[in-house]
Length: 363
Ligand SMILES: NC(=O)c1ccc[n+]([C@@H]2O[C@H](COP(=O)([O-])OP(=O)(O)OC[C@H]3O[C@@H](n4cnc5c(N)ncnc54)[C@H](O)[C@@H]3O)[C@@H](O)[C@H]2O)c1
Ligand SMILES: [Zn+2]
Image 1: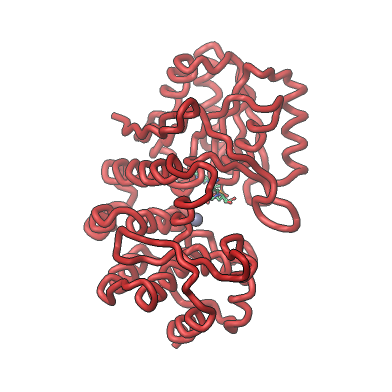
Image 2: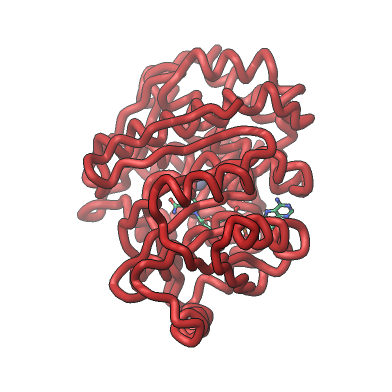
């Protein structure tokens, strides 16, 4: 049985289905139900294609659809203008029309890229997300942000463009490397901290089973994360306010990624360190109790995160925070926790606060 999460966005509303082994069956069933057209392009990456590409294509073909499979190299570098240009030309050569649809079969890279292509090719065609990483299931496939990178920075060209459907097939997580899986778990823990104390408690109770990819336990947890993100996004589709709470742990996390050079840390690994820093700052400026800071730290450690700060001087870490897109008029904006399950956005955190936390954590 699939868990279903409805994303309420007026006429752009859609469902997220979460379950073990649902992809091929539900894709063919729902593409007909949603009247998605008879032609589609599945965009995937070079790692996912040999694992699942043919199965998905054949399932669609078996239902009488014309499906082409387009593969980009695995990795962040594919979120580029160059790769986008190649994809547009493939779609045009294959004569995909306005009535066609695009399936993103992959992690966040493929989801962001294929979503960007779907938003722009012929001024927009229907789009289905089939996330294959834990991060994509709980985060990037929900919310409608699609983008590619420029040499000057990440996600600088993009759109808000909602999919018609998201199919999160947990069976695909079985092949996901443990490190990638753990990285996604950082975002799962984040949802508990920012929005749902009960989820956080559940994670404390079931973390070992979840880390062992016990699908029966994972399904409701992933569904709850999607529900939380959908809830936040429904209230703030275009990121003018509430959506900022999703950035808990990300101010420091992004700075660590920037300093280490993208590639040194997986996103979730940097965010895990960032969440511990944010928890400590919350104790200082947000009223979070020491016991709750300890619970956050302990859960992150149990998930297997190395929370050692990178060996860089404070000046190096603060520089990217100053230019972070959350900094408004020179003030740093932080998401802090009042308690587990409740956060707020503030510009009351000073550089001195961060420096103190940074140095204490280094000892
Ligand atoms: N749009 C959003 O709201 C949003 C939110 C968060 C992150 N993102 C974006 O998501 C991207 C990161 O996504 P990601 O962490 O999923 O990385 P990714 O897409 O690069 O996937 C990680 C690696 O796992 C491989 N892989 C994927 N699924 C697999 C499977 N089932 N089995 C084996 N290997 C598999 C991929 O080929 C890749 O090598 C970044 O570009 C980031 O900007 C977007
Ligand atoms: Zn994140």
